[in-house]
Image (tube, rainbow, N blue to C red; front, side, top):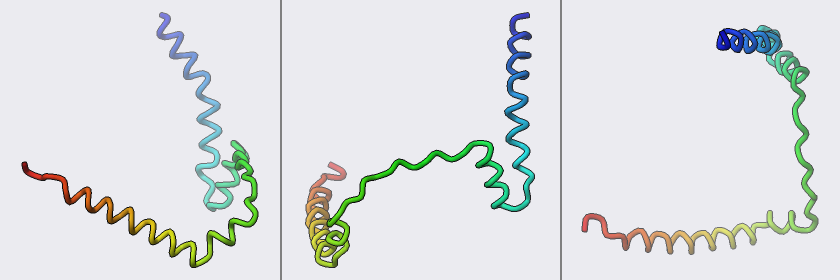
Length: 90
């Protein structure tokens, strides 16, 4: 008897949730459908990140990119040396 009452309560509260999500499902135009879903559950605002001044121009310069490539090449050669020294089949 308790199980039947619990099932009835579960289905009673899930009816409005199902009805809200299906009304946007049949909107033919994609942008209108997205607007419908946004009205039902508004999107959360993205957290604001503090603006970094002075570093954006420096990190985009070709000299900095070349330095990063050199650092990565050194790390890759170290990793290759470690991988080639692993005994496979000892």
